Length: 545
Ligand SMILES: *[C@@H]1O[C@H](CO)[C@@H](O)[C@H](O)[C@H]1NC(C)=O
Ligand SMILES: *[C@@H]1O[C@H](CO)[C@@H](O)[C@H](O)[C@H]1NC(C)=O
Ligand SMILES: *[C@@H]1O[C@H](CO)[C@@H](O)[C@H](O)[C@H]1NC(C)=O
Ligand SMILES: *[C@@H]1O[C@H](CO)[C@@H](O)[C@H](O)[C@H]1NC(C)=O
Ligand SMILES: *[C@@H]1O[C@H](CO)[C@@H](O)[C@H](O)[C@H]1NC(C)=O
Ligand SMILES: *[C@@H]1O[C@H](CO)[C@@H](O)[C@H](O)[C@H]1NC(C)=O
Ligand SMILES: *[C@@H]1O[C@H](CO)[C@@H](O)[C@H](O)[C@H]1NC(C)=O
Image 1 (cartoon, rainbow, N blue to C red):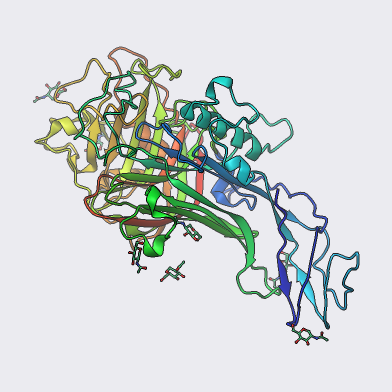
Image 2: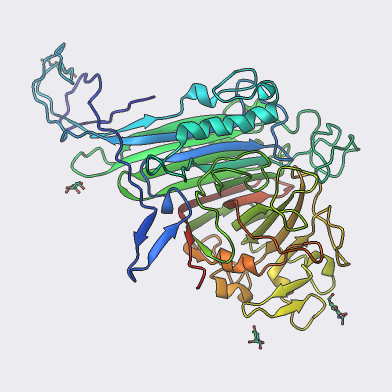
């Protein structure tokens, strides 16, 4: 635990000050999961921190290899799971104005030399996760670690996430049945060493095979990153104690290029880089998460997202018990997502920037996933807002389109209906590799990049999405078009095509991950993407609307 005090000087001439602990009241737990809108209808949020407004931040970090595992830890970095969770305390005492304090006194101040006036910021940050927790790695025990996970990097990371969740967990009432843990920053390296046999094929173990299909510079290309943490701390933006301007700031950053030392973004020529910094003014507005992602020759395929994941069960693409922010799982069509996005740099032509990506899991017979990777199927749908992303779906490439499109008035348009099918609304559709009754022609999704088979429905801005508040034309939401979006993600996802075996009961479309960020997909040059995300909320809407 770190107790941090911010001291401001009202006069110059202070040589030395303080020392220790202002008794601080424990953080005021401000839970605004329900609030009343102007129309006096009740707004119910599915996330623990509606709109990212809670001063006491909960945020975690996870890094994934090509098939969403760890594989091997990077030395001295521990298991690639970390968190920054704190409560903000506010001293019950008013700010102190102290004059002529005695040095060596028992007072809260040690002052030497001349008249000095000190004002103490009444806030302090009480961290709930130590750097030792964040550095935990295979071989090091922690509460709740299962014996078989102790020396298995994949299982260890999954248990570590649950452990960090226990440190960060927020219970809104003492007996809350819906505790929640953190926003999740997810970083993924798309290199795949096919000779390693580390990734299964549609969930089935397969032997090594010849390289060429995936980026990989050779041994070790699937490494986990160097990860650095700047724990959230307080600072005054103006140095003037007469304004309420206490800022909270923190971040995670690092690189995959292990030999690069820590040169930083200003001289990252030739090396990959990632950074997520968060900041917020105490008591005001939303946290703003600033992201940067840079690819390099050795790491040409990188992904960086901020996710609202389920607080338990599986989240999108993760086949272990998860921790997250979605204390209620949203179900299509009854939810919306609100967020503010400002894309500053796009990340080049291959950057598939997702506003928004939703992930879930159900089997081809419609049953819920149960962790059996041979029959579980990850389902994703993503709106890609980079205007350089072409539609691979077309009247001449029907195999890249879903079999049909459903309009807001529930009219089904088959993809062979060339006069009416909205081809340019779809970047790419691919079916699960383990589906047995696919309609020809079809394209199946990459069988290696998830722990199990996956299905992808990738959308592009198009007028047909207007009904849902989604981008309707190329450039919407892109660089220079920062906006606050209210996306009817529930409505849209209720009308997307997802594969199911004929005659089976339609799956409940319950979403375990909602995220925003980019996937720079095998870029041939070093690319940088940069964006900020704030105000994220998932709003549950009434089933009757
Ligand atoms: C107080 O400190 C300042 C420098 O910080 C020094 O110049 C000055 O001489 C000191 N005054 C006394 C009375 O010690
Ligand atoms: C600072 O915040 C307090 C409490 O919200 C308020 O009473 C005070 O007027 C504010 N001061 C300034 C300079 O804004
Ligand atoms: C991470 O950020 C810190 C603080 O801004 C900086 O000193 C460091 O160089 C960065 N690390 C890398 C790998 O760029
Ligand atoms: C990096 O460059 C930016 C903009 O030029 C500058 O503001 C910042 O201080 C630099 N950081 C370091 C660590 O050199
Ligand atoms: C950046 O780092 C590389 C590798 O260490 C070095 O050769 C180059 O001179 C550096 N560039 C600048 C502008 O510092
Ligand atoms: C549904 O909407 C389409 C245009 O999107 C329109 O052509 C069609 O007539 C509508 N069908 C019904 C039944 O309202
Ligand atoms: C178009 O596709 C549907 C569904 O697969 C099929 O029933 C229909 O016969 C096809 N129409 C044409 C003209 O091929």
